[in-house]
Length: 124
Figure 1: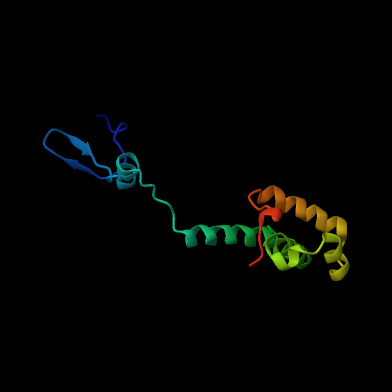
Figure 2: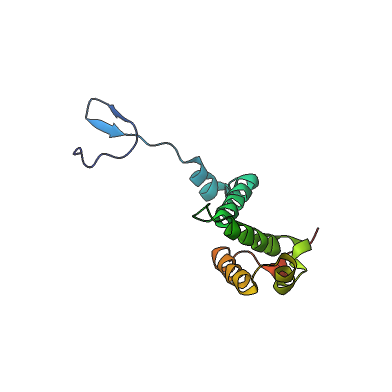
């Protein structure tokens, strides 16, 4: 085995040369032998999704508080049942925001978070 062909992981000498070591993949054994799939904890997934939404709300430039406010309104409109009952035009009239700007942000949200379906969400 040349030094360029060495597997990743810890290496040790066994008298015949260098032998590669890898961590045992228990998850693969569980999946293949026992049909048990390991998933990330639900809270971890939800935190990641929440962080993604907050990153979209804040955008790349935190120096635009107006954009953050507009994106916050869209995120609430898309995700909260209480706000979802209102039309985007009602929200624009109530907040004084420009309707075409809100519509543009709503389309951006839909492209970025295609997994969010307003019609499938139920109020608690």
